[in-house]
Amino acid sequence: MMPNRVPSWRDNLYHRLLFKHCSLCQLPLTHTEQYWCNHCISHFPTLPYCQHCGTTMLSTVTNCGRCLSNPPRWHRLYRLGEYRPPLQQLIHQFKFYGKFWLAQPLAQQLAYQITDPAPLLLPVPLHWRRYCLRGFNQSHQLALALAAILNSQVNQHAFQRLRHTPSQQQLTKIQRRHNLKYAFKLHSCSLPDHVAIIDDVVTTGATVDQLTQLLLQRGVKRVDIYTLCHTEQSLN
Image (cartoon, rainbow, N blue to C red):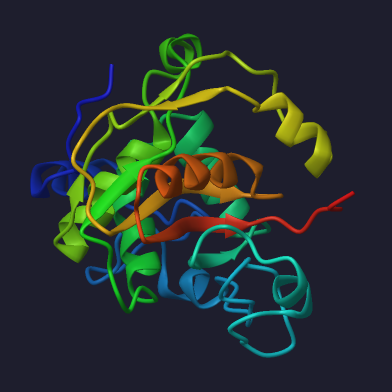
């Protein structure tokens, strides 16, 4: 079972002693490199995107045409890149192969973009069945790492997943919304005016939309989304 803490210097030292090669290209790391080499980091996608919904654009904009006509409920979305190599491999290692120590360097890369950090970070919850199978909640680990960098707080118990919903990978936006209906609960807790929802990957935004709605109904004034990757997918 995963500890509810951000990886410490001991974890980082443990990683450096045992893993002396880049986790992406497998080339040896220099004494100044950690987790992956500078060459692989240089290939992280830094494409311009809509700062509201996260869609890749020709240039960075506050609102794309779709957001002007039908804006998401949240205020701002910060992303590290698109769900494609090399970030795709890193997220697979982090999420499906138990490499929880990747939360810290991934959070560091994402934190560079966050100009107005929320004082409270709320990770997207896992249903207890999926948590037992995976052993940890990747969004919670990412939130812990971000909080340590941004000087924010984390409340992993604010949201609860009530239903064990089927995988959404092959579902359209409408199907995802139906799949997630009444799937989440927001517990009674103290909430500031500005909070951020943490998710590892945002596709159609159905999950974070449901959570944002619960927060707005509770009186939160501003909800941001912090995510590693945004996936371009049909919105039908």
